[in-house]
Every structure is written in C-alpha cells, then in structure tokens.
Image 1 (cartoon, rainbow, N blue to C red):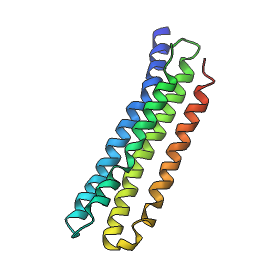
Image 2 (image 1 turned 90 degrees about the vertical axis):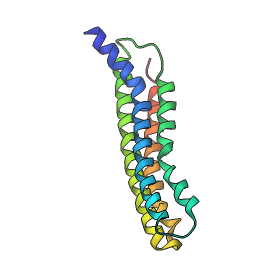
Image 3 (image 1 turned 180 degrees about the vertical axis):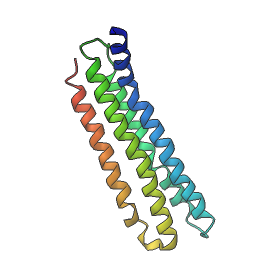
Length: 147
C-alpha cells in the first residue's frame, strides 16, 4: 500500500508537465489547422495566423515550472498533497490548452473573413490564458505548504 501512495505522489509531480505538454500540442494543432485553412483562402498576412497557432504553447511552460516546484522527496506524508496539486493543476492546464486552441481557431476563422476584428477576436483566448495562469499560481502557492 505504501508503494501505491508513493507512486501517486510521483505521478502528482510529473502530471502537470505531461498534461501541459499534451494541452499545448493539442491546442497548437487545432489552431494550426485553422491557420493552414485560412492561408488557403487569403492572399497575405500569413505570419499572424501562424503566430496565433503557437498561443497555446504556454501551458507546457506552466506545467514544467509546476513540476520543478513540486519536485522533492516523496514520503507517505506529502504524497497526497503532491498528487492533488499536480493532478488538479495538470487537468486545469489541459483543459485550458485544448479550449484555447479552439478559441484561437475561431479567432482565425473570424479574422480571415473580417480582418479588422483580428485583435478583438483574441479576447476569448486571452481570457482562457488567464484561467491557466490562475491554476499555475494556485499550484505554486499551495506547493509551498507541502512538506
């Protein structure tokens, strides 16, 4: 039983990085596909669409920082805290990355039809980024209290 508890603690340490990487990959893929589609329909300004596709890449960075913050010796006393913070922040990063990719894809599709709304169309993606930052800060603050 003790081995399972320790394994869950280790899972909690590495989950934010793994889930953040998956989130960034999926989000960038969704946005990138919309970017490619938009480039087939417009005559210029490709760079801004390609640049937008990288917007969800921040979630892997947040996950890596959380992982390093949680990284410590795993004991039966701290395994539950490491697991809880790691898994929950990782899930939050995952959802933010996927949905931000969808929001960016929508922004790209809207901006190709109406270029003057390009900047404003990014507001939903920026709001989702804020939720990812909240999860990131939560994990950093709470991890300081784990022995």
